[in-house]
Length: 418
Image (tube, rainbow, N blue to C red; front, side, top):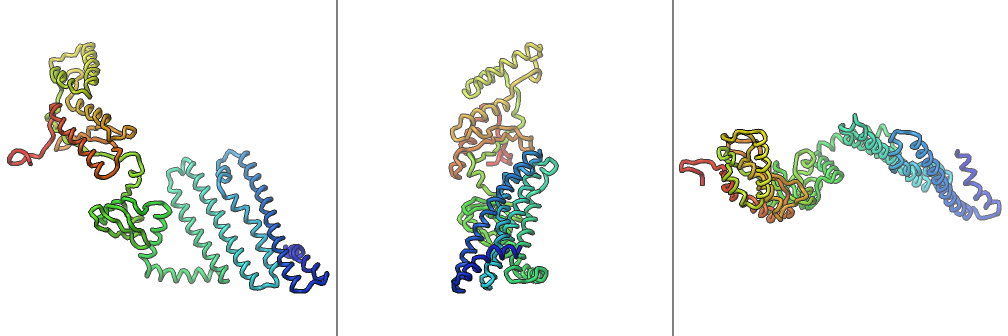
């Protein structure tokens, strides 16, 4: 190949010398012509190779049912591959073109070699990402931690690539370089352990977008509950809502659990999840007179009428003995109260009706029956959110006696705790 390149790039200098052109002028002019010629050849190789490679991939993709080649076409692997052949041409041409310019041959040879190494790494890295997307679609691999494996391979790939680049720059044997790096890295890890952990954690935080400046995070281990004001190599500073500042080691963000409220702030509502305890011995079936009284409550008037008609029809058709309230179907005061709370939440202006909204009865406890409200307020600001939640529960607690129920309170020597 070198003989062919010498013929391609040597004609201009020989022609100029035959024409009697000065040696220096002929050298520089032929150098300029050869550089232009090399660039044109590289561009033509790029166009041809891109056309051939693209057509080949698409032809294979059409003829196969496997989706792996479809991912190759959709991804940018081909674009990286397109540059490899032109770069190899440049790499082989530089020593021939710059044969009389040792310094520049050395410099440009190193640059092109490093560029080729980086390009090969990018091709392999993109291939690994394609493999990741493909394996995620395969049922038997869909529940496996594919991302973790690919990240490990990428780290190893870049470490090897950096080693090759350093060996190319300084003309060091790769084995010797790896031996030296291994010995030095052990000392560095011991001395700069926290700094290295912080650096790795910072990279993970940035790549995975775990925390941003301005995020509200909660980390109970360090007593942090507030906004992130600074992220650096060693620490993350959090301004708590009581205006104190908590300093968290950066590596703790990747090793320990914490809560980031950004998702809530970016969503359409802030969750309200609170319950009220109802005395179990106040829950009972409702009599006809009590139902008549409860029909005066506008939010559940239609519901009581409809349900009462259905229940009466069922009990009549099944000839249920209603001398005992437990027989047949009946309405309970707790069930009606749950329905009332649901209707109240639906009509409350501060809640997002497009998000989940319910009133649910939870597992009975020694302190009573928990009746939990689960909804989302449209206003996510702390003070307004607290006001909305308090306003809802003020109403719920005040409405409890209307349904012949009682809220649980711990007894004391004087009756109840105050």
